[in-house]
Length: 416
Image 1 (cartoon, rainbow, N blue to C red):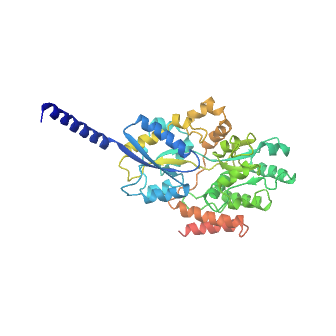
Image 2: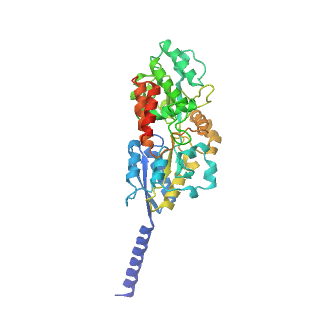
Image 3: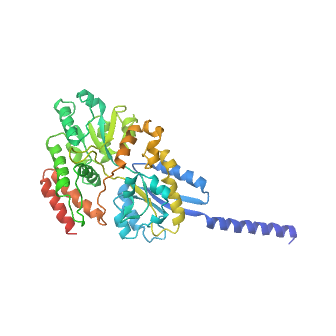
């Protein structure tokens, strides 16, 4: 072999080795996300593309599933050699995931800037027993949406600020024959119903649990909340199909102009107010933080946020954390305010957000984020919620009294 040929071979071998080392150095992250509500799949892919351009040694493999599949996908991936490095999880799961060692404790990774920069209420999304299992993302609550044109037609000039005022206005609209059913809710036997119930429980200053962890919802504000729900079914202000509806059904009914008031997540704002393909009431929509009850509360809320965490089975925790902190950073969240209001304190000081198209939604969100009311932090949340769903539904359908329904749910939970 000539010296020239030998050198050429040596160079090719060197390049091959270098290429192999680079391939081995490339980090592949597997992410599990939700295929509905909040940031769209297209949004998450754009965010991720921007991240990988900044980190060319990282590849992110994204998987999107319906919310209903998210929990089980995360649980079943534990210990898998082909599991996930980043997962989107619901606010109701950290207790279970901590107990089962499904998510890493990332408390020590949270910098002071992140800790102090996020709205305080958002931290309940990812915290269990003072440990943090991720960073909050898609911070949300349920809000009171109202149709300005319908209210004007009924001669109602002020937006209701208490739940009794909402019912009073609904009765005016009904009695004047403007709408048969002014109110619509997501009261199907599903988690959506529990979220609506939580909003009303917070309004009535109730509690899911006692200090020692026993059920407390069957008395006080919890019972008052269900009495309120049943009363609106009986007086005809609530659309009776609400017992079959989820949030998207509520959005469609409201956007068709068939409801004066609706309780829903923030995603409904842009779709109902600005999207003429999705809504017949564009330009007529108002939104406020969910109201309170005189003598009990000023506002009401439910923590409907989600978090981004790292499964304990991940072998790429450092890279996963870097990706998570990018997705949840203020610049990224500020760039996608049309789909989700940011969770950073500084974002609410930005005139572009507060005075722009998202301003009404942002102002309502700012109020709600100050006191997001949590659903119970219990490891057996799935069973807890199922018991409540089944028995609340029975009360809404008029088969049992609210008191009997909630007592049956409490007895079932105590028996677990």
